[in-house]
Image (cartoon, rainbow, N blue to C red; front, side, top):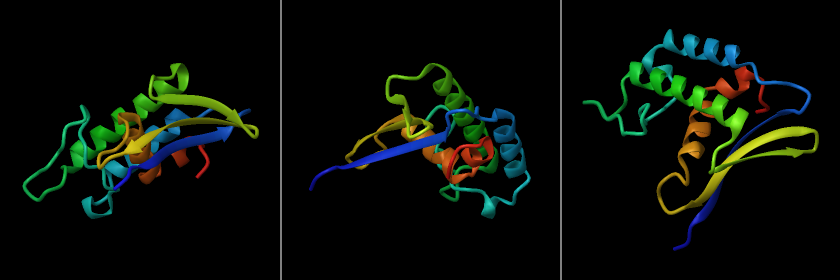
Length: 129
């Protein structure tokens, strides 16, 4: 059994800048969303598993994770990180992370990007879908 290459990325027109305030607004909207409609974020702010009595993270834990993820994305966008690369491809600025999967997510930042994409926060910030 082999491993697969998994890549998560965000891209935006190179002449534009992400709207971090719009991302925060999206998280605020999610905070007012019923729990059943909240996108599945199953890790905590420090990367720990958040398994409640029902097997899922609490709503407050999920919102806290998304807030931390957005701050991490903002930090990586400005200064990069060792498991991410910032590139210009076809008039787009692209930030990506990934690696081989042996069962777990390949990198913490892959997980962070995945959480934000699933929750619609990267789209709110102005990144391509």
